[in-house]
Amino acid sequence: MVRILDKATSQPRSRFNLGSSTIIRRSPARSSLASIRLRIPSANAQPNRVELVATVGVRGVTGIAQVLFRIFRDGNEIFNTVQGIESSGSEQNYVVTFQAINRNVPAGSHVYTVTAENQTANTRADVVGPISFSGLAVKTSS
View 1 (cartoon, rainbow, N blue to C red):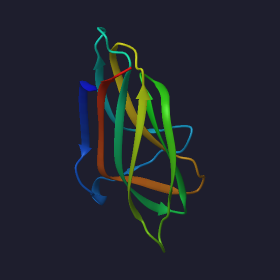
View 2 (cartoon, rainbow, N blue to C red):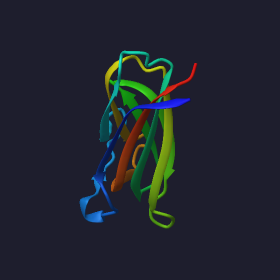
View 3 (cartoon, rainbow, N blue to C red):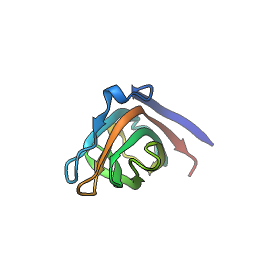
View 4 (cartoon, rainbow, N blue to C red):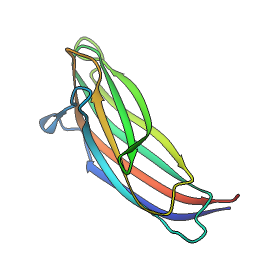
């Protein structure tokens, strides 16, 4: 049996738009893309899981960038994945979607944030949209 505890969504960009592109910062700096807040009630909320889904539109500008996407809960990294982004002479536009599951989250209000950072020197990748980030907190049966 599964019971919904909370849900949240954020869509800072709803479409692809080269005119409003943002450079993905070079590691160790990172670009914050979207945040959501989920509340886990204190009464009988364990066991639980938070299901997170992020979608980010990215464009390769120079070289082949290795973009590290991370998800943080309250400032602590809980998930990461890397996507190679090619530029001119090949595919340039990508929609990267990934899912993470955070299990047995403590009671309280939690901020989840998705970020991106370019790990490859002398390359450039931009966020061009869309960006969406959603979370669903559910109580699971023990």
